[in-house]
Image (tube, rainbow, N blue to C red; front, side):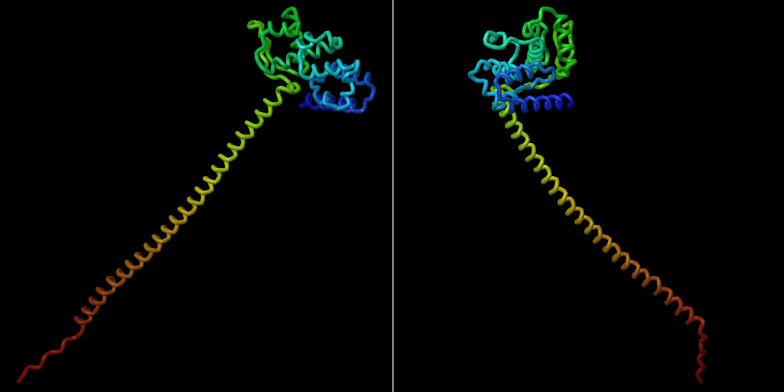
Length: 261
């Protein structure tokens, strides 16, 4: 995050300078300064400053082409067009090699040493590994592992470069595909939420019905219990009363009948 913020600040500085400079030579010098800066690896925003179009058709037009090459190209592109581009300083050479490594890392996370040495115009493995360690990994633009046994560089992270014009359509298509997938996923989630809400309401309704049935059963049991208790009271009181009447009748003195004359 610190590297990204620092680079954004550097880009903003050069964009502002490119917007206010008037002299063509000053703009050319600004391009040389930007392409030599040790912490700058994105150039499309600077390239898009309208003021730089002043260089087209002038003796400094090649500087504008050089800026475009640093935004989108690699070492091989400079070699193919070196006769119509400005000569590079040591800092610019190192920067273009760094950008080349980033471009190669975009398409493949395992970079063979032979390919890197050819693309970077490096003559031996020791020089290549020193460059990858000191000028790439220590600079924070890539992270990876140097595999001397397999003679390759295994890329774990690589900073992004400016999108080349031909990459824009692919990027737009990728974003549209992602948007379509996101919409489908959103609809699926919404359907799941509706189903869950419906199931929740159904469960609440079912629970309420069960609770009502339980309550009805409780009331029925209470009524049955009351009825049973009522019958018990009746049967427990009647026999007692009959026995009491019988005992009272036995205890009452009997009258003797008078003999008939």
